[in-house]
Length: 73
Image 1 (cartoon, one colour):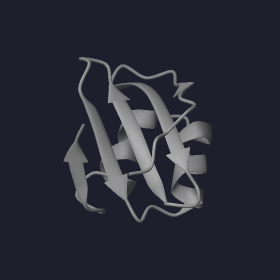
Image 2 (cartoon, rainbow, N blue to C red):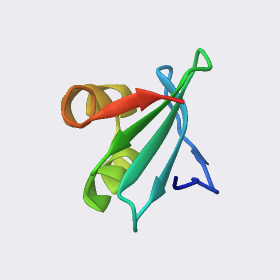
Image 3 (tube, rainbow, N blue to C red):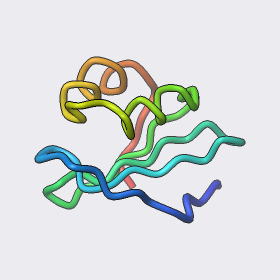
């Protein structure tokens, strides 16, 4: 299984940090309350969008949650 080695802290009340494995297309998300989720087959553009959007929580809700297969870590 792929391991995300680097997480990037984001400015969000919903998320604490995000990481991405471009080869496996896995997005790993650490929520502010401590839960960690992985999202599969996520394009790199979606990860980059999370890093550059003005509202991380809104972007997460509209572009990631319920858009990709996921599982808690």
